[in-house]
Image 1 (cartoon, helix red, strand yellow):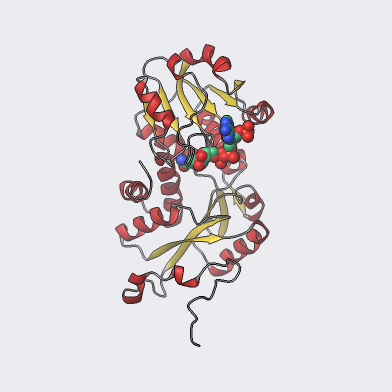
Image 2 (cartoon, rainbow, N blue to C red):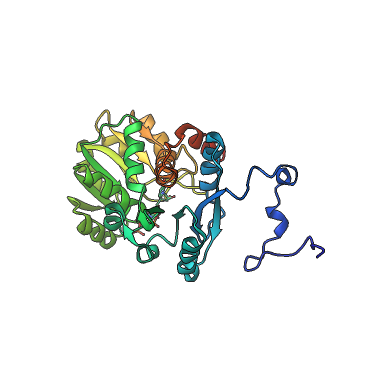
Length: 307
Ligand SMILES: NC(=O)c1ccc[n+]([C@@H]2O[C@H](COP(=O)([O-])OP(=O)(O)OC[C@H]3O[C@@H](n4cnc5c(N)ncnc54)[C@H](OP(=O)(O)O)[C@@H]3O)[C@@H](O)[C@H]2O)c1
């Protein structure tokens, strides 16, 4: 059949030619009958940096694996996971809006996925499909690898999915946690579920008395993210003690206004790429059983984000 240049991919209305990589016309990139498939399910998902990060790791290690992004609407999630079982897809990441709905589609959950109430990684263990959450452990590794010896009081900003993983992680190693959220009821619900010491409104006035005791502030809100890069959460950084740490989960841009302001106040800072790399590295290791090349993965992300 004569291919028409303007045909569209069913269901997406996107030109099929967009998917033709010029390199692949001359170089099939090693994909053959042995190639193993992993990927991410999301809706939308075309902005995801995970394919870049994982494919860079596979290339670096010479693994015959490929990582693809699948745009799957919520009503097709169960079919997609059945398809994974039928096709022998080796692993998947799940992103918005599938992290909660996938809890019911696996054979077993890890303790982290169960406690957080969200799955971001599917992997196989002796023929059983396991739902895991690598965000929590990824966060801890990122913070520790930056040199922050956790143990003191942590102030977590936000009460969404990311905050849930971060609070679970901090509580799992015995850190006292104070949560601050814009919508108090949502903050209280998360605080109650995960045993948080104190829940406060996310305002300068409410937080100021607490700040001298805080060792680590973690921004789990999207405030400061592109395109609103001149904004930052309403926290009195000037009242933090010397040697305090500020971590921003936002990674677009990498150097957020919150991190720049914290540095000016003499705080130590941790950007959002660390958690992104480590949660991906943990998934990579669940799938392949091989230590992930962290620097290669981080480089792939840095080259695609605004610093
Ligand atoms: N680095 C990483 O690996 C990583 C991993 C996960 C997430 N993230 C980033 O973390 C951020 C949060 O993600 P999420 O999935 O947790 O989002 P989410 O579930 O939508 O939760 C967002 C939270 O931020 C609060 N919030 C939103 N806009 C706000 C504003 N203008 N002022 C004050 N608070 C505001 C919300 O407060 P209300 O409850 O009042 O609505 C809510 O608690 C995103 O930027 C995401 O990209 C990064």
